[in-house]
Length: 178
View (tube, rainbow, N blue to C red):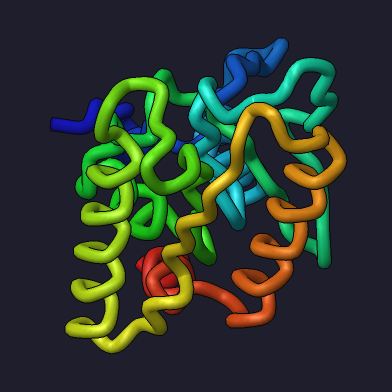
């Protein structure tokens, strides 16, 4: 169950929240600031990066702006640990899409994590198609730790570009109306 804040609503774990205070302690100002912060800090694309895929010397930023979209990179211990519900929560929170970076097929450091990630992303893609959203909002890419670091950054940025080309997530627009 997701936490609930009075005056703000349900707290999404995929959105950054920063504590803020009003010097006068006006509750209305605090609530308005909280709502504004939720809208402006919500990522447009979430990249889940398996720590076993990160090459030595990689300098991939943890967040950046690309095509007027906020990109957030989350490291996960293994891409196989990504549960489908967490991937769907990112989309439910308003993200345009997500990308999971997994080890190459047959070369997972933790046995079968990349296969599990592939099955879960495929399941999410099928569910997206069933509800009328483009399945391309869920992307899976493979990368090896021995490949050159600039290649990973290029791969992630090109995948993010494809996701951003799909436009706004209709779930975000529906969420903003409520």
